[in-house]
Image 1: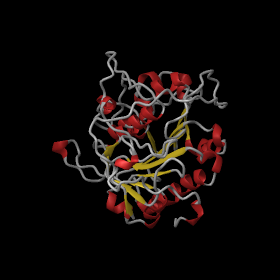
Image 2: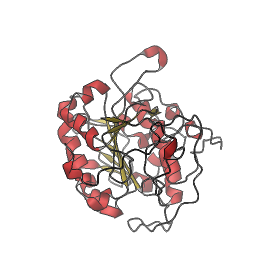
Image 3: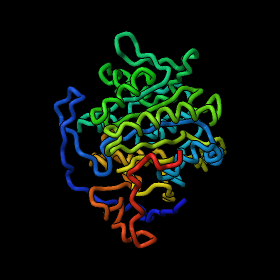
Image 4: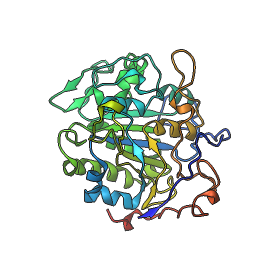
Length: 346
């Protein structure tokens, strides 16, 4: 496996120019969304509670790294589960959520940046059943379907949970995910996927989680139109190492990025430090959004100074996330991705 170490420049980021615009036909919004700096669609799939070495010990997950870019120094943000999910969509330390109990937060999330910009989104929850009127179902757990609210971060935000229009973007995954991927270019621009407690390895193990994970990944990779300018992030909420006196750190987890035209290399490792906050920052920088505002009107969250993923492909291949690629450790940009998925070993 080739090693591609990102340049570490604390607090340094490029200010992108106003992005180009495109028209999206799968939304009733009249807002024309921006074209992304690195990608036009972001999909994140979140699995559960597994140490990195255990995941790499599974042949399927190991082989996925052959066709993608491993984020070798990616960390969960906390223990237990729920704060990790919250920090994937918020810019404060878990929005005041530090355990797995039901929480109702008045803070804002990445959705509050998406909608004014015309960025379409949908959250896919296995085993989830919306209310009959289309509203959000705040149920803590459905034992018959293995859905749990603590793995659905959107439900913790008052301005999502109490908004029927937004609730209609939180859907049953089994009924909607494959159907939406089949829309190709018209699929949502942000897709968050949470498997049930068996399929995410929470109640089972990594070998059990393989079948469902491979189905999801294959469904996307085999749709060429959907994959155009799409970045997939397969990650875990946390590892299985609990150290109570320091909020669960260290929390190193398996994370791989896939997308033939959105990552700079395949079968490679980016060793820059990242965690779940990096998802939020990457989304903000990609679509030239502001930082997430706080209830007091300030924007002083983690996304004010955190860094985005650093090895994503821009329109100009000589521009990386922080500096010209010529300034990377090997004096040149990483090898371009192979355009033929079929010759990858997975």
